[in-house]
Length: 237
Image (tube, rainbow, N blue to C red; front, side, top):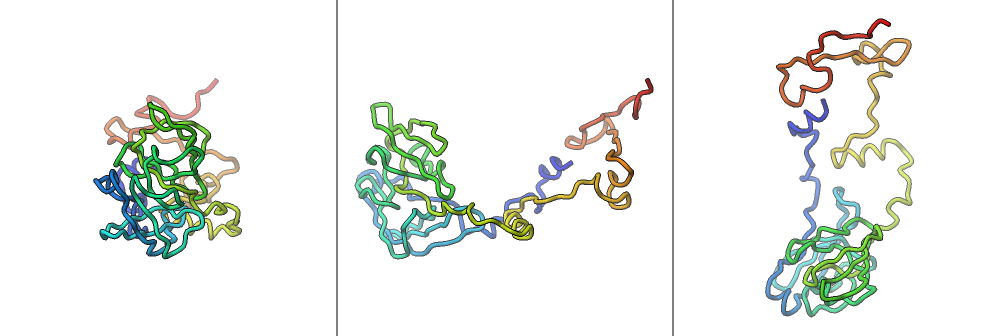
C-alpha cells in the first residue's frame, strides 16, 4: 500500500530539503517593525528547485537575513525597507493598515509575527480593497475576500515569474526531472498493462487483477481491502 509506505517515511517520500535554498521568511516582529523601518539591500537572486518563483536574499543593516519571493522588476543591489514607516515601494514590507487601497501585495501574514503564509506562488498577488475598524479587506488571487488584522504584514508588489507555464516541457524527460527534484511521482505504468512475469496484475487477454485477501492479524496500514473473507471469487448465478 502506498499509504503505508508514505506513513513509514522512507527517503522516497521525504522532502529533499538539502536541494532547497531555504524557507520563506521576513524580519521578526520586533520594536523596529512596530515603530520605525529597517533598511536592507538585495544581495542575490536565486532560482530554487523547491519553489516556483525566483527568490531574493536581503541583508538588513543589523545583519538580519531574509529570503522571500522576488517582486516583478527588482534587481540585485536594490534597497528595500521593512517596518511601519517604510515607503510604498515594490519589495518593501509593511503592515496592511499602512498600505493604501488598490495596492498589489503578496506574502501576507495570518497573524502579526507568524511570517508569510498566503500568496507565495509565481505571478500571484492580492489586492487591498478597504480599511475599517474590523481590519483590512483583501481580495485574494481566487477573488475571495478575506479580512486581516491591520498589524499583519505583507510585501508590496506582484511576484515575478508569471510566464512560468507559458513555456512547454516538450519532452517527458524534462517533466520527469522536474518532478524528481521535489521527490514527486510521475508517469507510473499500470500493473494491468505489464507482462505476467513483471507484475502480479499483468498478462491475460483482458484487464483483470488478482484478488487479495488480508488477515485479521495484519498491522495497521496493511489491513485494508478484503479482510479475512469467508469466500473469494465470483458468485455463481
